[in-house]
Image 1 (tube, rainbow, N blue to C red):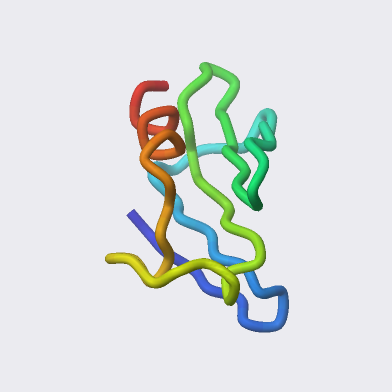
Image 2: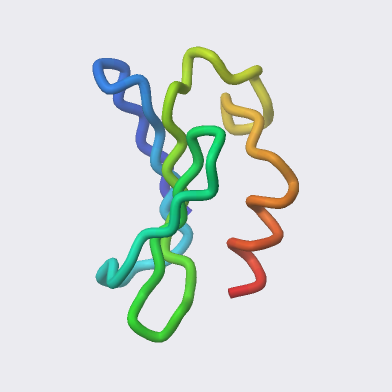
Length: 72
């Protein structure tokens, strides 16, 4: 897992696995999932990072986002 934070864009990217992004699904609330061609979740983008409450990774990612990411 790799986490990148872009303070200028006020965003974070959590890369779960290597691969090329085939499609992106917007989940609302500033969360987006990147999928590979095989349908595996490659990463989670968190927008408006400064407005999110702090969690383990410096951002509180909702449980439903983690469930979607880890189930695909």
